[in-house]
Image 1 (cartoon, rainbow, N blue to C red):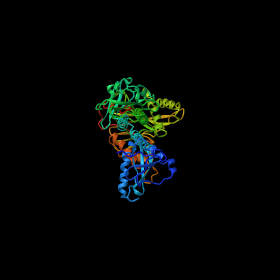
Image 2: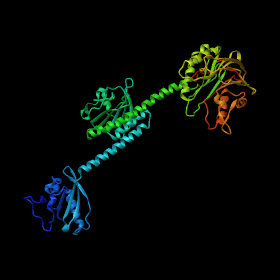
Image 3: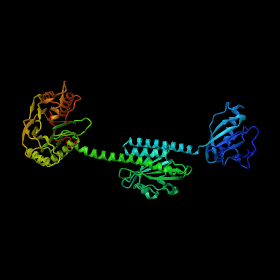
Image 4: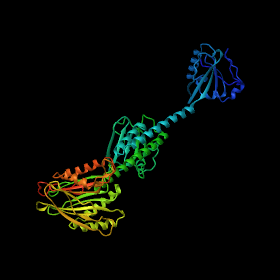
Length: 558
């Protein structure tokens, strides 16, 4: 039997109250904005104000909604007939039509319950929206943190596509800008693998993709016909037909970083406007990360290319003479600095090999840039290498005409290995004179002197000659070795005397061993203290002279 319809007091159809269910109320409660409903112990609504009638409009057969009837029964049963004892405090909640209502019970005498009703729909919707916003904010924070943690472009693309499939859709396709005729593609399925391919595609086959790859705003998802998508868009393993699609650009730093395609099957809910907005926010972060990774990759490639030209070469035997070099920058985390050396082999064994070692004023990258210019200039002056003074003079003019405003010191050594002997012509331009260690342990200074280059209009040099017998070694070095400050008190220079002593102990050993020994002892003297760049080159006449040939030693490792 359906419950009787309840109406507001004063209505001409107001029903009589059941026995014992009358509750004294004031007439002003009709105007109260708080919905109040009085229900007797049998579950029959007996009174309700206008606010309650508005909330419960659409209730079943004019009676209580099912969830409220059940809540009322529980409250009455729990009271055991007592006026206030033992009843559940609530609140209880449920739906009335399309609204969410919260009901708070107050038990009165005779088992009658006064229900205070609250339309909770807006609060619940606000809470749901807040939860969604927090979840999406968390996702965006995770996206930024994860994608910006890698500067590897392929890995960044994989992560972006995988996270898009996990948080935004069932599948995602990241389309990168074309490389030649192919577009790099990254396909991801939710819970599945991420696959990278490169293939020629027609962006015009996907509505909005051509525009997205150019950085234009996305077209609304409702404009895209999912049934017309080309096969390459749908990843292998995607179940069912595509029902909803989003195509959004990946904004980069100045240029687009690509486009993102999101797919949902026809069995899933179509993308909402809020999800389209979220997809654009996701894409903005993914695009920024991809752009940063690409920029880093480009800069790293440029740096590596330039670095190859600035790094000291690896030295080997040339025309029967052994060469070895060692280099330590002023800062251990740097690879280039202001010291440099090169070995320019003669075109054939009858031509001299030119060895250059120098030191530019300053340290770090700026000094390294000038060393590159000096090395290139000297390489261009190789046809004049027979005249050391002329080479130094022309280099001095080049440096004076540059914008660097730095000077340099260097030493040139022309090595002639014809006739089974190793003859050296050495010229210093403001540089420490070379030292020769004989096979018997004697250490001699080569008497060459000169002015530094890049400072004065006129340079003066004095060339000296010496001959290396089998087992002899000539050491070229920069002042970073002799001026290395350390020792027991940490403030004493390594000095030429100690260098001579170390060289005397290196008599007869290979060129590489001489360089390693000098660098090791100087490093031990320094300890952890600061130091200048340190470069050394050893030229050795082997005890048994090899036939002309062997592995050449060019500027970049031969």
